[in-house]
Amino acid sequence: MKKTGYIIMQVAVYLILLGGIGDIIYSFSVESIIPAHLDYLKITSADVSPQLRNLDLGFMRGIGGFIVAVGIGALALLYTSIKTDNRYALWGMLLMITIGEGNNVLQMILLDSPFYAMPLTYVIMIWIGAILWLTGKKREKEKPAANTV
Image (cartoon, rainbow, N blue to C red; front, side):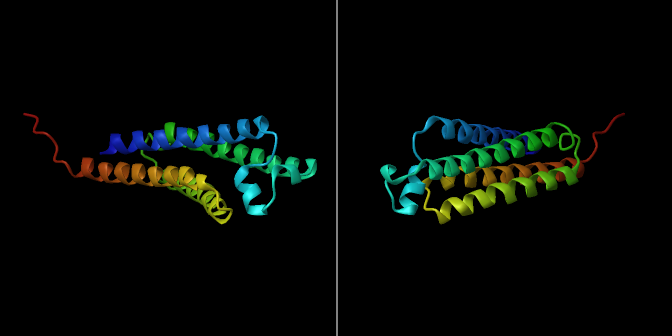
């Protein structure tokens, strides 16, 4: 259980990191603002001024940068402190991801973006992995020691 939980946390953190990189790349590869934002503002691409485009895509780059930073921080915790059974590091990582990506999910829902399911999946995965890791750790401690005669 513990190993499975750790692997699930690894996958979730790498997906978070890739999501942030994807946001940054996307913001440099489009001509207009994000379609979900156009729908929310009830405008078309033709109505978008260069200033609005720069503002919207700048926010997208900023969010992507934050998500990359969360991913790097989570990887550092995962491969150092959490790997050596530091529960405080685990709780710190869970809070960092839950607050950061949770806010991302909330804002996407408020903007009627269909992509909110991606960061929501990452938050759910990290919690499932952490729960499996924690319960696996408890079970390992509860196992009786092997008889050595």
